[in-house]
Image 1 (cartoon, rainbow, N blue to C red):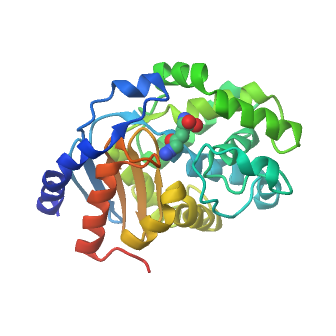
Image 2: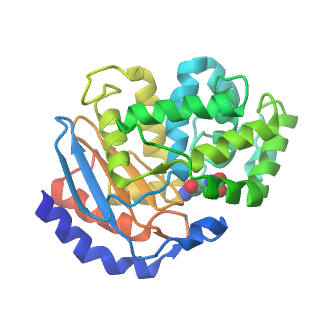
Length: 305
Ligand code: DON
């Protein structure tokens, strides 16, 4: 397997030139464009890797399914689904248009920014710092990595520039779909996006999802199977934003991308995959990362369809 992964990285390394590192969050612009790494962890805990799989980057939107799991455990399904829907949008991740036109003014799903901010507000805690501490504690468990931290420079950069997220959050508060203090909810959202991980951490999360919520090492159940199924369904239908349909056809596994360049994938009953390539396509997904996953999926027959 390691030989296959090394070959995939060699084959696709130059694809990074066709993408661009996210520049709307100034701190992300500093990342070298041509990094590329992959890590795979199977359900027996065996790990395989190639390329830049130890380089740290920020979780960004990959935090959305993770915080959703915590919000579901804190609140139960019915309360969470009062605030967010279950349908893909076909719109960009930061789109604002349907918030006003959709009749309930409810974000269509928790994988777009608007839905994710409503979900961040639902995490239990008396203020943003208690909520983010709980998110970090959960992150450390589902990555089996006690060193997981927030990158404070990226957080400050998001806080200073996230005006579109801010405007969506105030709109959602006005229509009753974001509870509590809006700035506190935004702080939680920007901090969860700024949590630093490696491709290996993403592979571990993907493997826990592939094992229906049971930790690979301790065999402890980290979240209920029902919530695992909900999150995997969202990943399959909305995980790559307006690139989700194409990804389903070309790769065919539940996955979640982030503008930090990560993609976290889960192959039901088989393995977790973490990919890192910071140069993005026009939809905010790792350009070279997608090419690596297409080749891997056809090589190992991973598609679930
Ligand atoms: O809300 C934002 O702009 C970012 N912090 C996260 C967005 C993101 O990762 C979209 N992903 N592809």
